[in-house]
Every structure is written in structure tokens, then in C-alpha cells.
Length: 166
Image (cartoon, rainbow, N blue to C red; front, side, top):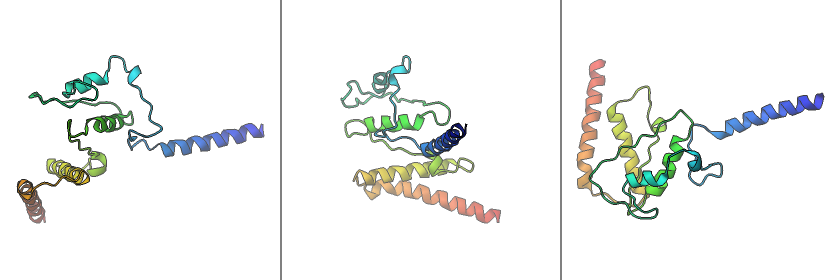
């Protein structure tokens, strides 16, 4: 009886440690050993159809330029693997002959309880600039000038609003 009780306590401790180590809020990287591929059990989902919609006609081929804009919606409950799937897709798409992919984890970069459109734009620009730096791509100042002006205007408006509120 004592051994069963000790085993039960060890199992509870082990399961709580396992759950704590899973990190449900963090997506799994594409090369993570814990990642299980589920494409075969997803019904009529085919990755090739998704890539086809994005202009990639051959599994290892380049993206063809299309005039149609594509909008893809990834939905599901928290922790079901949306971000993990998007990271895998980003890895497949981020190539010079396909797309320049910028991944932004909005929950880490933004406060979902206190957010404005300008906050989203600023987070997107920050992620884009980091990705450009990581890829050793230099952007001429002439292209950045309008963006800098836009952010300056937003910051000035925000400061004016704060001063007015005081």
C-alpha cells in the first residue's frame, strides 16, 4: 500500500513538472524534437494546396507572382498549435525566390488590453527592421524617411494628448 501511495505521489510530481516544462504559450520551433507532424490525419488538408494558393506550384520551386492577394486564416483554441504551424510555414516560405517572411508574436510584443493601431504598426515595423538586419539587408534612408516621419507624428500626437489630459 505504501509503495502505491509513493508511486502516486511521484506520478503527480512528474506530471506537474512535465506540464510546467511544456510551455504552452511558446510555439515549437520547426526542428523541435517534441513536434509531431499531423498532416496525414487532418482530413482534406494538403500542404501542397496551401502552397499553391501562395503561388508555389512545385514543392521546391519558386513563388510565382500573382496579382491576386491571398488572405489565410489560421484558427483554433489557445495552445492548439497555430503559431507552431505558422513557424513551419514561415521556414518553408522564407527564401529569396519565394517570400520575405516576418514573424511577429503579438502577445509578446503588445499589450492586448491596451492597444492601438499605431502600436500594431510600430511592432510590425520593429519586427521587419530586425528581420532585415538579421538577413543583412540594408535599406536606404530615403525609404525609411517617410516611416520615421509617420512615427514622429504619432509620438507627437500621443504626447500632446497626454499633456492635454493632464
